[in-house]
Image 1 (cartoon, helix red, strand yellow):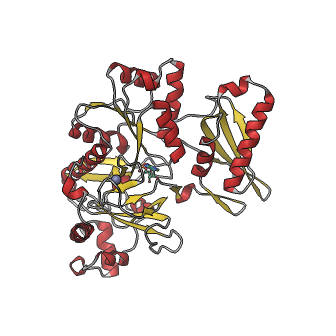
Image 2: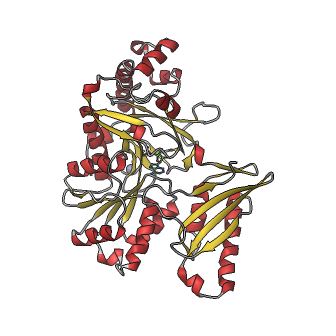
Image 3: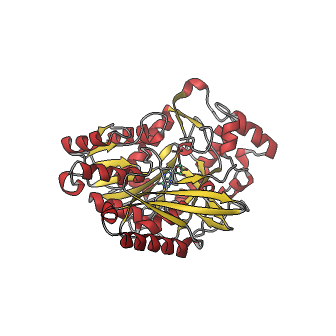
Length: 432
Ligand code: AMP
Ligand code: ZN
Protein backbone atom coordinates (compact mmCIF):
# COMPACT_ATOMS: atom_id res chain seq x y z
CA UNK A 1 0.00 0.00 0.00
CA UNK A 2 2.88 2.38 0.70
CA UNK A 3 5.93 3.02 -1.44
CA UNK A 4 7.95 4.25 1.56
CA UNK A 5 5.91 3.55 4.66
CA UNK A 6 8.29 5.18 7.15
CA UNK A 7 8.26 8.48 5.35
CA UNK A 8 4.64 8.49 4.25
CA UNK A 9 3.29 7.76 7.70
CA UNK A 10 5.92 9.58 9.76
CA UNK A 11 4.56 11.27 12.90
CA UNK A 12 4.10 15.03 12.57
CA UNK A 13 6.72 15.85 15.18
CA UNK A 14 9.33 13.69 13.56
CA UNK A 15 8.41 15.17 10.20
CA UNK A 16 8.88 18.69 11.57
CA UNK A 17 12.30 17.75 12.94
CA UNK A 18 13.26 16.30 9.58
CA UNK A 19 12.06 19.47 7.86
CA UNK A 20 14.14 21.68 10.14
CA UNK A 21 17.26 19.65 9.45
CA UNK A 22 16.59 19.75 5.69
CA UNK A 23 15.77 23.45 5.77
CA UNK A 24 19.12 24.24 7.37
CA UNK A 25 20.93 22.16 4.79
CA UNK A 26 18.96 23.89 2.04
CA UNK A 27 19.88 27.34 3.30
CA UNK A 28 23.55 26.42 3.40
CA UNK A 29 23.36 25.04 -0.13
CA UNK A 30 21.28 27.95 -1.44
CA UNK A 31 23.89 30.42 -0.23
CA UNK A 32 26.21 29.08 -2.90
CA UNK A 33 23.98 30.60 -5.61
CA UNK A 34 24.48 34.18 -6.78
CA UNK A 35 20.92 35.12 -5.93
CA UNK A 36 20.66 33.78 -2.38
CA UNK A 37 24.19 34.75 -1.46
CA UNK A 38 23.28 38.36 -2.06
CA UNK A 39 19.87 38.03 -0.43
CA UNK A 40 21.15 36.35 2.74
CA UNK A 41 23.84 38.95 3.05
CA UNK A 42 21.28 41.71 2.71
CA UNK A 43 19.02 40.32 5.43
CA UNK A 44 21.89 39.11 7.60
CA UNK A 45 20.79 35.49 7.61
CA UNK A 46 23.03 32.89 9.12
CA UNK A 47 21.78 29.36 8.40
CA UNK A 48 23.49 28.00 11.54
CA UNK A 49 21.35 30.22 13.72
CA UNK A 50 18.07 28.94 12.34
CA UNK A 51 16.59 27.10 15.29
CA UNK A 52 12.96 26.74 14.28
CA UNK A 53 10.89 26.28 11.14
CA UNK A 54 9.04 29.51 11.82
CA UNK A 55 12.22 31.46 11.25
CA UNK A 56 11.71 30.86 7.54
CA UNK A 57 9.28 33.77 7.69
CA UNK A 58 12.23 36.12 8.00
CA UNK A 59 13.32 35.25 4.48
CA UNK A 60 11.66 37.20 1.63
CA UNK A 61 9.60 35.30 -0.94
CA UNK A 62 11.11 34.24 -4.24
CA UNK A 63 8.98 35.03 -7.29
CA UNK A 64 8.88 34.07 -10.93
CA UNK A 65 10.23 37.55 -11.68
CA UNK A 66 13.29 36.84 -9.50
CA UNK A 67 13.90 33.64 -11.46
CA UNK A 68 13.55 35.55 -14.72
CA UNK A 69 15.84 38.36 -13.65
CA UNK A 70 18.56 35.91 -12.72
CA UNK A 71 18.11 33.80 -15.82
CA UNK A 72 19.63 31.41 -16.59
CA UNK A 73 22.15 30.43 -13.90
CA UNK A 74 21.66 32.90 -11.04
CA UNK A 75 19.94 30.34 -8.80
CA UNK A 76 22.27 27.43 -9.51
CA UNK A 77 23.99 26.36 -6.30
CA UNK A 78 26.48 23.77 -7.57
CA UNK A 79 29.23 23.91 -10.14
CA UNK A 80 27.77 23.63 -13.62
CA UNK A 81 29.34 20.27 -14.35
CA UNK A 82 27.21 18.75 -11.57
CA UNK A 83 24.05 19.51 -13.54
CA UNK A 84 22.61 16.75 -15.70
CA UNK A 85 19.15 17.97 -16.76
CA UNK A 86 17.27 21.13 -17.55
CA UNK A 87 13.52 21.66 -17.71
CA UNK A 88 11.37 24.70 -18.13
CA UNK A 89 7.91 25.99 -17.32
CA UNK A 90 5.28 26.19 -20.04
CA UNK A 91 5.82 29.93 -20.26
CA UNK A 92 2.12 30.77 -20.48
CA UNK A 93 2.67 34.01 -18.58
CA UNK A 94 5.85 35.35 -20.14
CA UNK A 95 9.40 34.10 -20.56
CA UNK A 96 9.68 30.52 -19.39
CA UNK A 97 11.74 29.88 -16.28
CA UNK A 98 14.40 27.18 -16.36
CA UNK A 99 15.28 24.69 -13.66
CA UNK A 100 18.46 22.65 -13.40
CA UNK A 101 18.92 19.30 -11.71
CA UNK A 102 21.84 17.26 -10.45
CA UNK A 103 21.87 13.47 -10.66
CA UNK A 104 20.74 13.36 -7.03
CA UNK A 105 17.85 15.72 -7.77
CA UNK A 106 16.61 13.57 -10.62
CA UNK A 107 16.82 10.47 -8.47
CA UNK A 108 14.80 12.05 -5.66
CA UNK A 109 12.24 13.53 -8.00
CA UNK A 110 11.78 10.22 -9.80
CA UNK A 111 11.27 8.49 -6.49
CA UNK A 112 8.69 11.07 -5.44
CA UNK A 113 6.61 10.65 -8.57
CA UNK A 114 6.93 6.86 -8.21
CA UNK A 115 5.66 7.19 -4.63
CA UNK A 116 2.72 9.21 -5.93
CA UNK A 117 1.82 6.80 -8.72
CA UNK A 118 2.09 3.86 -6.37
CA UNK A 119 -0.16 5.65 -3.88
CA UNK A 120 -2.88 5.91 -6.51
CA UNK A 121 -2.60 2.19 -7.20
CA UNK A 122 -0.26 1.77 -10.16
CA UNK A 123 1.88 -1.37 -9.94
CA UNK A 124 4.47 -3.44 -11.78
CA UNK A 125 2.51 -5.19 -14.51
CA UNK A 126 0.53 -2.09 -15.46
CA UNK A 127 0.89 -0.63 -18.94
CA UNK A 128 1.39 3.10 -18.62
CA UNK A 129 0.75 5.42 -21.55
CA UNK A 130 2.15 8.88 -21.00
CA UNK A 131 0.16 11.31 -23.11
CA UNK A 132 2.05 14.42 -22.08
CA UNK A 133 4.51 16.28 -24.23
CA UNK A 134 8.07 15.06 -23.88
CA UNK A 135 10.82 17.63 -23.83
CA UNK A 136 11.23 20.74 -21.74
CA UNK A 137 7.83 20.22 -20.11
CA UNK A 138 8.18 18.17 -16.95
CA UNK A 139 5.06 16.03 -17.38
CA UNK A 140 6.75 13.86 -20.00
CA UNK A 141 10.09 12.76 -18.60
CA UNK A 142 9.04 13.31 -14.97
CA UNK A 143 6.35 10.65 -15.16
CA UNK A 144 8.25 8.48 -17.62
CA UNK A 145 11.18 7.55 -15.39
CA UNK A 146 8.98 7.24 -12.32
CA UNK A 147 6.65 4.78 -14.03
CA UNK A 148 9.68 2.72 -15.06
CA UNK A 149 10.84 2.80 -11.46
CA UNK A 150 7.49 1.41 -10.30
CA UNK A 151 8.01 -1.31 -12.87
CA UNK A 152 5.20 -0.53 -15.30
CA UNK A 153 5.62 -1.06 -19.03
CA UNK A 154 5.89 2.52 -20.29
CA UNK A 155 4.53 3.71 -23.64
CA UNK A 156 6.05 7.17 -24.21
CA UNK A 157 3.23 8.26 -26.50
CA UNK A 158 3.70 12.01 -26.03
CA UNK A 159 0.95 14.55 -26.61
CA UNK A 160 -1.57 14.67 -29.42
CA UNK A 161 -2.19 12.34 -32.37
CA UNK A 162 -5.46 11.19 -30.88
CA UNK A 163 -6.23 8.31 -33.20
CA UNK A 164 -2.83 6.79 -32.61
CA UNK A 165 -3.28 7.20 -28.84
CA UNK A 166 -6.46 5.15 -29.00
CA UNK A 167 -4.81 2.57 -31.24
CA UNK A 168 -1.90 2.22 -28.79
CA UNK A 169 -4.31 1.83 -25.89
CA UNK A 170 -6.11 -0.97 -27.64
CA UNK A 171 -3.12 -2.80 -29.12
CA UNK A 172 -1.07 -2.84 -25.94
CA UNK A 173 -3.92 -2.92 -23.44
CA UNK A 174 -2.97 0.24 -21.60
CA UNK A 175 -4.19 0.25 -18.01
CA UNK A 176 -2.91 3.61 -16.75
CA UNK A 177 -2.68 6.97 -18.51
CA UNK A 178 -1.37 10.41 -17.71
CA UNK A 179 -3.42 13.07 -19.45
CA UNK A 180 -4.44 16.73 -19.30
CA UNK A 181 -8.14 16.86 -18.26
CA UNK A 182 -9.31 19.09 -21.13
CA UNK A 183 -7.54 16.79 -23.56
CA UNK A 184 -9.23 13.75 -21.97
CA UNK A 185 -12.56 15.33 -22.84
CA UNK A 186 -11.46 16.09 -26.37
CA UNK A 187 -10.12 12.55 -26.79
CA UNK A 188 -13.52 11.18 -25.82
CA UNK A 189 -14.97 12.70 -29.01
CA UNK A 190 -12.32 10.91 -31.06
CA UNK A 191 -13.28 7.64 -29.34
CA UNK A 192 -16.83 8.36 -30.46
CA UNK A 193 -15.77 9.07 -34.06
CA UNK A 194 -13.86 5.79 -34.13
CA UNK A 195 -16.83 3.98 -32.60
CA UNK A 196 -14.66 2.72 -29.76
CA UNK A 197 -16.11 2.65 -26.27
CA UNK A 198 -13.40 3.48 -23.71
CA UNK A 199 -15.34 1.65 -20.99
CA UNK A 200 -15.76 -1.57 -22.89
CA UNK A 201 -13.03 -1.63 -25.48
CA UNK A 202 -10.05 -0.64 -23.34
CA UNK A 203 -8.46 -1.90 -20.13
CA UNK A 204 -8.01 1.57 -18.62
CA UNK A 205 -8.30 1.61 -14.83
CA UNK A 206 -6.32 4.62 -13.59
CA UNK A 207 -5.66 8.11 -14.95
CA UNK A 208 -3.42 10.80 -13.60
CA UNK A 209 -5.11 14.10 -14.36
CA UNK A 210 -2.92 17.13 -14.05
CA UNK A 211 -1.24 20.26 -15.37
CA UNK A 212 -4.32 22.47 -15.32
CA UNK A 213 -7.12 23.42 -12.93
CA UNK A 214 -10.24 21.30 -13.21
CA UNK A 215 -13.29 20.96 -11.02
CA UNK A 216 -14.52 17.92 -9.12
CA UNK A 217 -17.47 17.79 -11.56
CA UNK A 218 -15.09 17.65 -14.50
CA UNK A 219 -13.14 14.81 -12.88
CA UNK A 220 -16.36 12.87 -12.34
CA UNK A 221 -17.44 13.50 -15.91
CA UNK A 222 -14.13 12.18 -17.23
CA UNK A 223 -14.28 9.14 -14.93
CA UNK A 224 -17.77 8.48 -16.14
CA UNK A 225 -16.84 8.57 -19.80
CA UNK A 226 -13.80 6.34 -19.43
CA UNK A 227 -14.70 4.09 -16.54
CA UNK A 228 -11.35 4.63 -14.79
CA UNK A 229 -10.48 6.36 -11.55
CA UNK A 230 -8.93 9.77 -12.12
CA UNK A 231 -6.36 11.11 -9.67
CA UNK A 232 -5.48 14.75 -9.39
CA UNK A 233 -1.76 15.37 -9.85
CA UNK A 234 -0.28 18.76 -9.05
CA UNK A 235 3.16 20.14 -9.59
CA UNK A 236 5.11 22.98 -11.15
CA UNK A 237 8.44 23.01 -12.88
CA UNK A 238 10.00 25.31 -10.28
CA UNK A 239 9.36 22.53 -7.72
CA UNK A 240 10.60 19.81 -10.17
CA UNK A 241 7.24 19.30 -11.87
CA UNK A 242 4.82 16.48 -11.08
CA UNK A 243 5.09 14.78 -7.70
CA UNK A 244 4.58 17.80 -5.47
CA UNK A 245 1.07 16.89 -4.45
CA UNK A 246 -1.07 13.96 -5.43
CA UNK A 247 -4.32 12.24 -4.53
CA UNK A 248 -4.46 8.91 -2.75
CA UNK A 249 -7.17 6.33 -3.38
CA UNK A 250 -9.58 8.27 -1.15
CA UNK A 251 -9.59 11.10 -3.73
CA UNK A 252 -10.19 13.71 -1.07
CA UNK A 253 -7.51 16.33 -1.61
CA UNK A 254 -3.88 15.96 -2.56
CA UNK A 255 -1.18 14.89 -0.12
CA UNK A 256 1.66 17.33 -0.38
CA UNK A 257 5.01 15.62 0.19
CA UNK A 258 6.32 17.47 3.21
CA UNK A 259 9.58 15.54 3.45
CA UNK A 260 10.63 17.31 0.24
CA UNK A 261 8.68 20.58 0.37
CA UNK A 262 7.99 23.06 3.11
CA UNK A 263 4.43 24.33 2.73
CA UNK A 264 2.96 27.72 3.55
CA UNK A 265 -0.32 29.33 2.53
CA UNK A 266 -0.34 33.11 2.45
CA UNK A 267 -2.82 35.86 1.84
CA UNK A 268 -1.65 37.14 -1.57
CA UNK A 269 -2.47 40.73 -0.62
CA UNK A 270 -1.07 41.04 2.90
CA UNK A 271 1.56 38.32 2.29
CA UNK A 272 0.90 37.05 5.80
CA UNK A 273 0.43 33.37 6.54
CA UNK A 274 -3.14 32.13 6.90
CA UNK A 275 -4.16 29.30 9.24
CA UNK A 276 -4.85 25.75 7.99
CA UNK A 277 -8.24 25.56 6.33
CA UNK A 278 -8.16 29.08 4.97
CA UNK A 279 -7.72 29.74 1.27
CA UNK A 280 -4.64 31.52 -0.03
CA UNK A 281 -1.60 31.30 -2.26
CA UNK A 282 0.60 28.26 -1.96
CA UNK A 283 4.23 29.04 -1.12
CA UNK A 284 6.78 26.23 -1.35
CA UNK A 285 10.38 25.68 -0.34
CA UNK A 286 12.47 22.85 -1.75
CA UNK A 287 13.94 20.83 1.12
CA UNK A 288 16.17 18.39 -0.69
CA UNK A 289 17.15 19.98 -3.97
CA UNK A 290 20.85 20.50 -4.62
CA UNK A 291 21.18 21.98 -8.10
CA UNK A 292 18.76 24.82 -7.65
CA UNK A 293 17.20 25.22 -4.20
CA UNK A 294 14.29 27.67 -4.13
CA UNK A 295 13.08 29.22 -0.90
CA UNK A 296 9.53 30.45 -0.29
CA UNK A 297 8.46 30.33 -3.90
CA UNK A 298 5.18 32.08 -4.63
CA UNK A 299 3.40 29.58 -6.86
CA UNK A 300 0.46 31.94 -7.55
CA UNK A 301 -1.77 28.87 -7.17
CA UNK A 302 -4.77 29.24 -4.88
CA UNK A 303 -5.74 26.44 -2.54
CA UNK A 304 -6.10 25.64 1.15
CA UNK A 305 -4.87 23.01 3.56
CA UNK A 306 -7.61 20.50 4.31
CA UNK A 307 -7.86 20.04 8.05
CA UNK A 308 -7.77 16.62 9.68
CA UNK A 309 -6.01 13.36 8.88
CA UNK A 310 -6.63 11.21 5.80
CA UNK A 311 -8.04 7.73 6.17
CA UNK A 312 -5.14 6.29 4.18
CA UNK A 313 -2.83 6.79 7.16
CA UNK A 314 -0.44 9.16 5.44
CA UNK A 315 0.53 12.05 7.66
CA UNK A 316 1.51 14.53 4.95
CA UNK A 317 -1.18 17.19 4.84
CA UNK A 318 -3.59 17.53 1.96
CA UNK A 319 -4.35 20.55 -0.18
CA UNK A 320 -7.65 21.14 -1.90
CA UNK A 321 -7.75 20.98 -5.69
CA UNK A 322 -6.30 24.19 -7.14
CA UNK A 323 -8.90 26.90 -7.69
CA UNK A 324 -6.73 28.69 -10.25
CA UNK A 325 -3.77 31.00 -10.41
CA UNK A 326 -3.98 34.44 -8.90
CA UNK A 327 -3.37 35.78 -12.40
CA UNK A 328 -6.29 33.75 -13.84
CA UNK A 329 -8.67 35.79 -11.78
CA UNK A 330 -10.96 37.98 -13.88
CA UNK A 331 -12.33 41.12 -12.34
CA UNK A 332 -15.61 42.26 -13.87
CA UNK A 333 -17.74 45.04 -12.50
CA UNK A 334 -15.85 44.64 -9.24
CA UNK A 335 -16.55 40.91 -8.97
CA UNK A 336 -13.72 38.36 -8.85
CA UNK A 337 -14.31 35.36 -11.08
CA UNK A 338 -12.21 32.26 -11.73
CA UNK A 339 -12.62 30.19 -14.90
CA UNK A 340 -13.10 27.08 -12.75
CA UNK A 341 -16.34 28.51 -11.31
CA UNK A 342 -17.75 28.64 -14.82
CA UNK A 343 -16.46 25.18 -15.62
CA UNK A 344 -18.01 23.73 -12.48
CA UNK A 345 -21.44 25.13 -13.33
CA UNK A 346 -21.29 24.09 -16.99
CA UNK A 347 -20.28 20.51 -16.19
CA UNK A 348 -23.39 20.10 -14.07
CA UNK A 349 -25.84 21.08 -16.83
CA UNK A 350 -27.17 18.23 -18.98
CA UNK A 351 -26.77 18.92 -22.68
CA UNK A 352 -23.56 20.88 -22.29
CA UNK A 353 -20.71 19.48 -24.39
CA UNK A 354 -17.05 19.23 -23.52
CA UNK A 355 -15.48 22.54 -24.39
CA UNK A 356 -16.06 26.17 -23.54
CA UNK A 357 -14.35 29.51 -23.89
CA UNK A 358 -14.61 32.76 -21.97
CA UNK A 359 -14.29 36.05 -23.83
CA UNK A 360 -13.86 39.38 -22.10
CA UNK A 361 -14.68 42.60 -23.90
CA UNK A 362 -14.93 46.25 -23.11
CA UNK A 363 -17.38 48.78 -24.49
CA UNK A 364 -16.84 52.26 -23.15
CA UNK A 365 -16.41 51.77 -19.41
CA UNK A 366 -18.33 48.52 -19.30
CA UNK A 367 -16.83 45.06 -19.30
CA UNK A 368 -18.73 42.13 -20.74
CA UNK A 369 -18.24 38.44 -20.32
CA UNK A 370 -19.29 36.05 -23.04
CA UNK A 371 -19.19 32.31 -22.58
CA UNK A 372 -19.14 30.19 -25.72
CA UNK A 373 -20.36 26.74 -24.87
CA UNK A 374 -20.30 23.60 -26.97
CA UNK A 375 -23.57 21.77 -26.82
CA UNK A 376 -24.26 18.10 -27.54
CA UNK A 377 -25.19 17.61 -31.17
CA UNK A 378 -28.75 16.38 -30.47
CA UNK A 379 -29.60 19.89 -29.34
CA UNK A 380 -28.73 21.34 -32.70
CA UNK A 381 -30.80 18.72 -34.46
CA UNK A 382 -33.81 19.38 -32.19
CA UNK A 383 -36.09 22.40 -32.11
CA UNK A 384 -34.89 25.90 -31.43
CA UNK A 385 -36.98 26.30 -28.31
CA UNK A 386 -35.06 23.55 -26.62
CA UNK A 387 -31.80 25.22 -27.56
CA UNK A 388 -33.00 28.57 -26.26
CA UNK A 389 -34.17 26.85 -23.06
CA UNK A 390 -30.68 25.44 -22.53
CA UNK A 391 -29.09 28.81 -23.23
CA UNK A 392 -31.37 30.45 -20.71
CA UNK A 393 -30.58 27.83 -18.10
CA UNK A 394 -26.84 28.33 -18.58
CA UNK A 395 -27.21 32.10 -18.16
CA UNK A 396 -29.21 31.64 -14.96
CA UNK A 397 -26.90 29.04 -13.44
CA UNK A 398 -23.79 31.08 -14.17
CA UNK A 399 -25.42 34.21 -12.85
CA UNK A 400 -26.26 32.49 -9.57
CA UNK A 401 -22.56 31.82 -9.00
CA UNK A 402 -20.65 34.68 -10.58
CA UNK A 403 -23.30 37.29 -9.74
CA UNK A 404 -23.19 39.05 -13.09
CA UNK A 405 -25.19 38.20 -16.18
CA UNK A 406 -22.98 36.67 -18.85
CA UNK A 407 -23.75 36.56 -22.56
CA UNK A 408 -23.95 32.92 -23.55
CA UNK A 409 -23.62 31.64 -27.08
CA UNK A 410 -24.08 27.99 -27.92
CA UNK A 411 -21.96 26.33 -30.55
CA UNK A 412 -21.90 22.91 -32.17
CA UNK A 413 -19.46 20.27 -30.91
CA UNK A 414 -15.90 20.63 -32.16
CA UNK A 415 -16.26 24.32 -33.07
CA UNK A 416 -14.09 25.77 -30.32
CA UNK A 417 -10.31 25.65 -30.54
CA UNK A 418 -8.90 22.57 -28.84
CA UNK A 419 -5.47 22.24 -27.42
CA UNK A 420 -3.22 19.27 -26.87
CA UNK A 421 -1.53 21.07 -24.00
CA UNK A 422 -3.04 23.16 -21.23
CA UNK A 423 -6.42 24.53 -22.29
CA UNK A 424 -6.66 28.25 -23.00
CA UNK A 425 -9.97 29.16 -21.40
CA UNK A 426 -9.96 32.93 -21.39
CA UNK A 427 -9.55 35.37 -24.26
CA UNK A 428 -9.20 38.87 -22.88
CA UNK A 429 -9.93 41.45 -25.57
CA UNK A 430 -10.07 44.30 -23.08
CA UNK A 431 -6.48 45.32 -23.46
CA UNK A 432 -6.15 48.15 -25.95
P1 AMP B 1 4.45 24.26 -15.39
O1 AMP B 1 5.51 24.75 -14.49
O2 AMP B 1 4.50 24.88 -16.74
O3 AMP B 1 4.39 22.79 -15.44
O4 AMP B 1 3.06 24.75 -14.81
C1 AMP B 1 2.71 24.55 -13.47
C2 AMP B 1 1.37 25.16 -13.18
O5 AMP B 1 0.32 24.38 -13.77
C3 AMP B 1 1.04 25.20 -11.72
O6 AMP B 1 1.62 26.29 -11.07
C4 AMP B 1 -0.48 25.28 -11.77
O7 AMP B 1 -0.91 26.60 -12.02
C5 AMP B 1 -0.83 24.41 -12.96
N1 AMP B 1 -1.16 23.03 -12.52
C6 AMP B 1 -0.38 21.94 -12.55
N2 AMP B 1 -1.04 20.86 -12.07
C7 AMP B 1 -2.27 21.27 -11.72
C8 AMP B 1 -3.41 20.62 -11.14
N3 AMP B 1 -3.45 19.33 -10.85
N4 AMP B 1 -4.48 21.41 -10.87
C9 AMP B 1 -4.47 22.72 -11.16
N5 AMP B 1 -3.45 23.37 -11.70
C10 AMP B 1 -2.34 22.66 -11.99
ZN1 ZN C 1 -4.75 9.81 1.83
